[in-house]
Amino acid sequence: MPASASSPIRAAVDHLADLGVSDLVAVAPQLREVLAEVVDPRARRGVRHPLVVVLAAAVCAVAAGAQSYVAIAEWVADLPVEAAAALGVARRCPCESTIRRVVQRLDGNRFDIVIGSWIQRRCATRLPAGRRRAVAIDGKALRGTRTINEQPRHLLAVIDHQSRVVLGQINVNGVAEQGKAGEIAAFAPLLDTLDLAEVVVTADALHTQRDHVAYLHQRGAHWVFTVKGNQPRLRRQLAGLPWRALQVDHRAAETRHGRREIRSIKVVTIAAGIAFPHAAQAIQLRRRSRPASGHGRWHTETVYAITNLRPHQARPVELAGWIRGHWQIENALHWVRDVAFAEDRSRIRVGDGPQVMASLRNLVISILRLAGVTNTAAALRHHSRNASRPLASFGIT
Image (cartoon, rainbow, N blue to C red; front, side, top):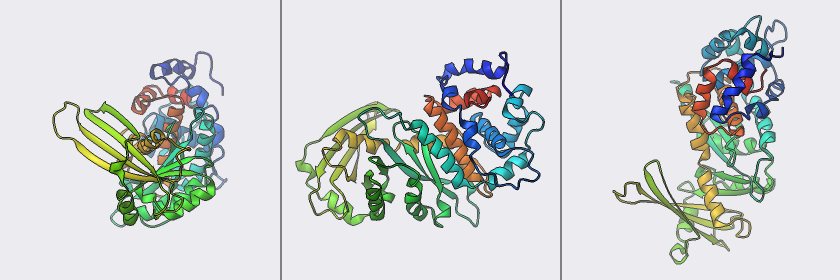
């Protein structure tokens, strides 16, 4: 049912400019159609609420700060009449048990593929001219799902460096029993969902694996991997290179969060002797930091990395940017889900519920970022103050 000209759904759009989210209505007009692609796990007989209605309600409720099935159901139950009609729940709202059963029974990986493919299409043309696309891959344990007898659920995600949107996610526990081992095994299945031609993949030292390099080479991708103790021979070889004789290729300094940090990078071409396939350049990144007040001693950290990119393919400043940009996945995704959405405090544990709820958070974060939102917590508060705002923001009208 279309909203009237005086509808609070339409009026809510006027409030979005305060947060710089006025572009949300243009970003997410197809969200309902995308959610309609998700396979309904329920038997067709006796279904009162279409799956797309339940999922749309869940997305809007999460965008308003809902963190549990009960909170989602309460948000839907409190919708104004006109907003409920626009969402499709005017006659009868889905109750908590309906929402819980639907979310628990969804195939989490398939759900992630559907929304991940849509997000990939939305940000495919957003890369500035002349720049390579870079993606970061890393895992996160859902601490609240730990029980006496079971390890916490572990999810592996991939985000875009530039836009910081979530391009895909996979349940690690479905690949292997233990989190870290599962991350390694889930690396290729997760990246199978992306077009990797000429894309730079960044990962932490856990994924500095020969099998991963062979996979990326086959997919036509490039990579920048850090090297730590899990590859002791390789790290010794990198540390033994004549770094002292080399000049610094790039230096950057900044003062943030009460700390002064100076980063310098040296890059050397690898001709032979490094025990890692397809490695073309070795990197030494040195970070020096101390309190911005100027008091206290400098703390120095040295990190080594390798890449298959040759000197004519990547300048030192670009390599430094990709290594630093990799931590966007920690700061701009994992930290946001923990702090703004209280993910680690969630006690949702049954079925694929933990993964689907994480996917809903990823979807909300991604749509907000595609619209230019820089403060996710403020956006959640904005949507929580008026039930019509999430529907207007996410194009569900």
